[in-house]
Image (cartoon, helix red, strand yellow):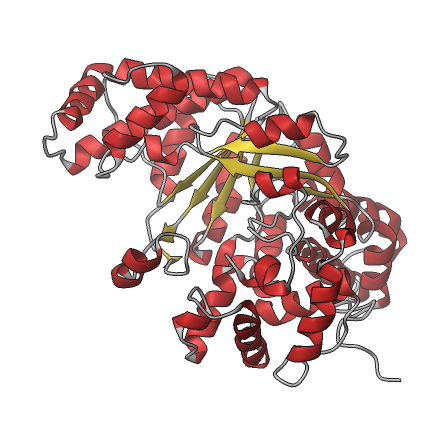
Length: 467
């Protein structure tokens, strides 16, 4: 009998890798501390009637691949039927070899549906039918998909204007998996945006504060931080091109804010000063509440303006940016640290050219107060694949302590994405197992090495976050 493509020792190339994975990593629960899952669907325990609805809709990774193959938008985000969209995705999969989508696709089919057939045009019809029959059952409801993934905690991402009504309801439900949130105030920083004034109105309404001044904006944001904190939020997240840093005075920020209210043109340096000031205020407030702050740095978003105008953001028109990161990031973190207001911090880079910058930057601010206080986060977005993970792990090992690393997350909108944790764990165990095989790590210490693997897989994150 032929061994299936996804088998017990997939990606594990030595007996040491197999031992590390199966004995120390495989069965650890998943703490997915950053994703974009919809909490409404978790609360309602949504049942998805087919794979397109749970697997393809909203997945811009798949959409980009399909467009590259020449598939029309009608079969991606358009009005084609769910079956037609799935068939076009199945047509794409064989062409995705050497892209992580090929591995993810077959891991997800195997782990959730026990399907080991390769997905292609020939197998598409029976896989669609078989999975649709399963998904129509309550055994494959949203919550049961999380259970099948051995998930212990998921942390979704919400704007300060969110009421958190679904999170509040979940805390009163009998659902045993913890569902928390991360505070994402990016819109409050985008003073240059045409939508900034309308956003202030929306923020003011939920905070019960009329935002007519910079002081009022800070009051509104702190009010929402207090609100989120009261309902269990312990993290924030910021998506930035680069860390802003420009010296400012409070008087200058008041003047800049008032210029925006009067619809006057802001100079680039004024925009930078405002962003520095508001982010500094937010970070000092996070420290007050003992939160973990996350900074995702480096994307170049919405490159294709024509398609962005048609489909909106987060539909597959983003790429890696080549922004300068080190100097402003150092200055910003140093300013917080000098005030003793630097809380636990996770840095993510999208440009792999910044790997060594991030791996060394964290060492500047790990002051011995907390194990791994400042973290370089896992390979993110375009880098959350085998090569990106390996480079991240190697660089972190060379320039810091990989043993303190808090491990993987999905950053996903899909309830079928949790095998990405398995993928990461297999890459991790194979990397270390290969070094034991070559004699670069002592095989007689495999139990200790196994503990490090277990820590990276689960326990470091468990101890790092205060949920």
